[in-house]
Image (cartoon, rainbow, N blue to C red; front, side):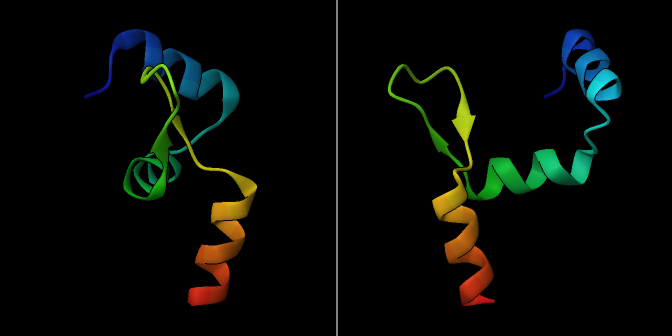
Length: 50
C-alpha cells in the first residue's frame, strides 16, 4: 500500500515501483519493525543464486 507521502518520496528520489517490489519481496524488517531493509549482503546472495 502506497501513501501519498511514499509516492512523493519515490518521485523525488526517482525510485521505481519495481525496486519497491524487490525490497518487499526479499528484504527483512529491522529490529523495530518499522522498515524493510535489503542489505548489500542479501543483494549479493540474490545475485549469486540467479
